[in-house]
Image (cartoon, rainbow, N blue to C red; front, side, top):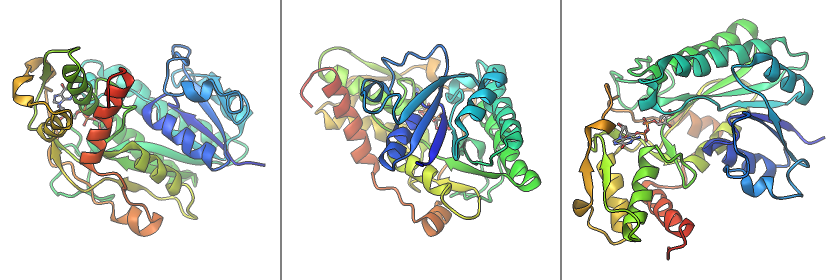
Length: 329
Ligand code: F7E
């Protein structure tokens, strides 16, 4: 019998890469999709269109985190060995505008899932996607798994609640439950409203004459950016250990939004100064500082290390945008 995995958030960037990773390892993969998700145009469309995969080794189920009965039913029917909980409202800026629904889904949604897992007749291994946003404005840099959380966004606070609950269920109820503390991770499949994709997309469109300028918020903001394909590998590795514990996944290197602009525009032979402007609409009420991670534990125990560097990633994302629009890469 092949191992079975269930993924919440399967239509997202990480969900789609994780699906490919697990299928490649002989898993039967099940995904939870919302009724509103358009599968034909999603990041799964290539798998959805493949008759040897869809409904053979990949199965999708309609359910929702805010509709516990549907989710409980899927969990009971699928009876997965591994559950990857990736779903949630993941835009930090937006969480200032819609804090209640962000917390409902990210914080309470995770607690509901933990309650369901606790009642399952057959135990499973749970991975929960935490975030560097939980550190907010930390007193130390780089951060590790022991650094205290000090979130400065509704999104960060919701993730802290969910992460602490995972720890509590692991300790109090003996669940095999793991938090991954994930720093920013990007790819050509990144959502269009995240800054790396927005910049790479604009650089490609300006190069090909489809756009004139790019408006950004705080370009001095710095992040520890990695590649999503490296991070889904970490998710899987963290569930293959005898003892469940939390792991931090990060590149350990800080770059500014301005660095992203410079690499993306240079990769298509453009001078960014002629096209980029600041727009207060994209500024946030609060910005975290010094979010840079120390992934020593993941390196030592999981043998994990990031394989794709910052410049390679941004260059690939920009050329993928050009290829997608039919222009020369
Ligand atoms: O912003 C600045 C913005 O939206 C990065 C999510 O995956 O990683 C992600 O959250 C930085 C911030 O990602 C624009 O103010 C400037 O300082 O790409 P982002 P994020 O907020 O760091 C963490 C780890 C998660 O867990 C989240 O789910 O870029 N910035 N100008 C801008 N950001 C956006 N989106 N748009 C701008 O125009």
